[in-house]
Image (cartoon, rainbow, N blue to C red; front, side, top):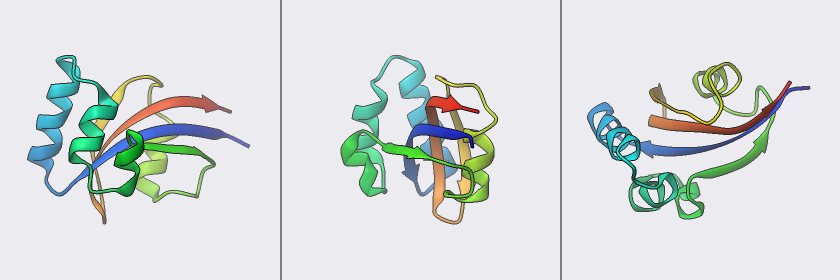
Length: 93
């Protein structure tokens, strides 16, 4: 079964998410941005979510993690929790 590891940053607004994405693309460290801005408790671990399989996360999140390019920051991804930036750190099929 497929497995993936990812980091994410969760914020309340799409505009805030886009601003953080720009900071990361301009060279800011993903983990530091997550620690300073994420509403999710995982922010304190640099946004790390550990390893998980399809179906363990909300569908919008799963779609990105199990289909998009590894090692790139994706988003904003809207879920019921807010807006996410997602970086897939590893994936096996």
